[in-house]
Image 1: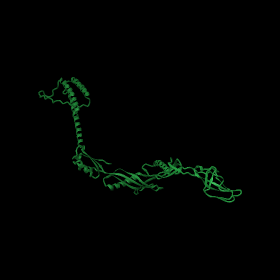
Image 2: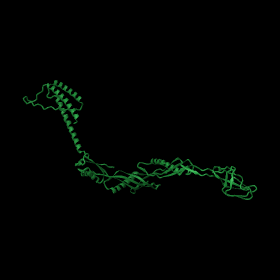
Image 3: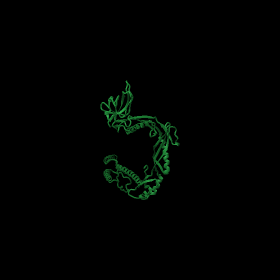
Length: 470
């Protein structure tokens, strides 16, 4: 018992004992009835023992005690002498309560002692061997009735869908253009009655001083009294740049020889200086396609998942046909390009539980052949599609290469654990560890002994814990 509680209880007993003595003194003033023969030797009573069991504060007990004593004294004076005072009856009740409390405390103490005796004094923690096992197999998805013996599972074709998205991106290319001379056409007229020839490279000068040179030989037919013979040939300005872009009629009048005239009825064009300009590249188009395809396929996946029923998985990747339409070809001069991507997809689902069952059976067979007996699957076999190929798109026949992976852990039977404990009693911690590590199925061991280095000699004091799933 706690020392402080012991001192407090003694104080309570002393106070109650003092009050009982006062009560006894009061009762002694009244005549007692003698029980027995007069000449019988009077034997003094044994010393009194006062024991009190309190379930309320001391102040309440003292007040109740005083009130009861006062009431009993009044009753005794009115009723006459009695053979036994009420205070002695009350003491008997206290003694009975004490004995009951002591009995209860004895039971609790016995239970505590028994609990201490059965608590293990050594704990051995074992982590069993776990081995990952994987296997692959081909599974055929059919929309008709599947045959499990042929590794067929149920499939279902979903409604095809077409979705499009467009996006505009800035161009990143830079084009260069060399300086170019203006191009045009000149017409020669012949007023002579005989044909005349103007050779290639004939230099002509316009009214504004721009020089052009012919690119072809001009065979001018003979003229008549009323009509001149004429022929048109190509020509270009002798200098590059926009200055060679002469207007219509800049060349007009006699040239070259007698009775020959020249004129440009249309303007010369295309003359320009060297320059650089923004240009569309194929990378610009491809980047726009990748961005749009990523966003578009997210929308396609969401639309496909809306058609999937519970227990079904979609065969991936989705068979889709893309169509890419840019508004500018690669190499074109432009500061931006707009690309439109369309995806037409036809999806199919398969029975996921059936595939998992096939793979679990296959992987379990492989684990048994590889590890032998004593190992069981921890958790579930995880499946994944490695490859899919469409065998018959119209009938929805697809071949899947599927992989299954699971964790197999050694399981210790209770009889095996009991045998292991029998072999370990009284051994040292180091010896017990070595023995356990050489036991089949044990991956790691931890022995907890407290302050000693030797395992108990009683097998009941050994506690063995197996941690699975590691």
